[in-house]
Length: 505
Ligand code: MCA
Ligand code: AMP
Image 1 (cartoon, protein in one colour):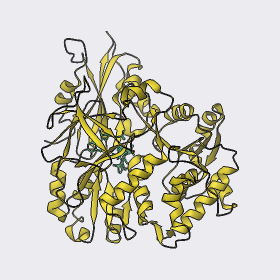
Image 2: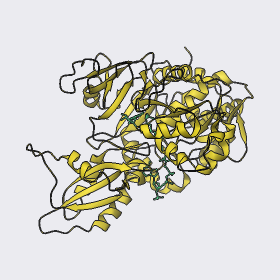
Image 3: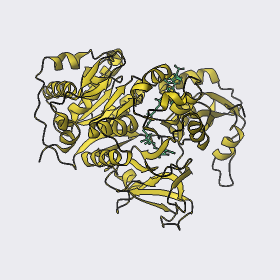
Image 4: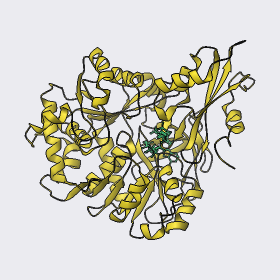
């Protein structure tokens, strides 16, 4: 027994001087350089007296060192737990405490805020900054660039990714080595990635899309990435001529289309554009094809499952659909009430099963049992149907979720903060169409009798407590919330009323 994740994604490139990361400053890191860096970090981690299976919570900017920390955790048998850089202290404190992290790695700018949180948890705190400086790399640079991977099996946990829930409490999705490896291998084959690929990588590396889909596919195929700190339109336009492929959320594609410099000529040499994390409007798909001649390949996944379906590489990429179940994924559409499989073509709950499906939620057996059936099917919370040609269509969500620019936002979490504010009786948070982010957050407040809540003060409290991308774009005071006869708030009625709030038509 070796360490399959390390051996199959990273170790296979030992000694290879072929490029792995092209950085915006013109530097190139080979696969061998990257492995040296990862091994030095693994040696540094080893000095912290961590045990295999310990969680390493990481909130750092995107950098080669941050990616090498992921490789080092695989090598050292530690569970990698990446966190959105937008999270504020109150949000971080929950993740660190809930996961029982033994090590926290953060940007030096956040060290003072995180120190008491780490201390309360008895976790060690190290820093890693965007330029690679900080206490972790200072220590790592004094280490040897070789490390014998800790023995692990495919069933061992490799990563935790936190995903919010309808109750407002985040759940740690436990992903095994096999979950990550099986999906990476499948996607390399389905999307025809090879060592000649150069992926334009502008996604964050704290979510499934940028970390497991993009990075693992490139690692498994032996290709390389143009590794950008974030999505910057000018960088993308400048560097696209050097790439063969790009992965992005729909906002990447609408932003590109909004720029006249994005032309067919710029993309002629490109092999593949992939979209996911949020619905790609059929209109965007069509406009992209008109402009470039390329049909974007849309796929569908989740934090809990990695990727489930994909439009075909060869064959029709059908706009408005997420394609077919991946070869090793079983997909069925069920009655949300009874769980019975529905006849082909009917709309119901999408359920998936396969080697990609996670182990469960960390220390939440009831939530795991509610969403992961004993026979291995995971209840996605997405409503969909399969058309007569087998293409999967996502038609809505059974879960109360907003997706803004590819980031998931659970209204409950924001409602809990709003409900707590002086003079507020109750609130409802909804997602409404937005031209750039797809959807954006709108908060509706109802005042307590004879009170007039200070909306500006409430907005600033929300801004202090929650990550920027969760902030309501606007707070609106209403006399009452629309309710059905059972007393349940009718969010559909609110969504309908405010659907044109941020769009011109
Ligand atoms: C940034 N802001 C946002 C978002 N991103 N607000 C709402 N939604 C967002 N997604 C804030 C910024 O902090 C800024 O605040 C203001 O909005 C405008 O910033 P802007 O410069 O326009 O944004 P940006 O920095 O260019 O970022 C937009 C982005 C980025 C490029 C779309 O959000 C992004 O990279 N999204 C990808 C997310 C992703 O990887 N999702 C995958 C999840 P201020 O004005 O105060 O400065 S994995 C997943 O869902 C599953 C598994 C799957 O299928 O992949
Ligand atoms: P997350 O919890 O961040 O993993 O987000 C997963 C959710 O994003 C899914 O359950 C879907 O609701 C949504 N999603 C991902 N890819 C797509 C897609 N191509 N089309 C529509 N929704 C998507």
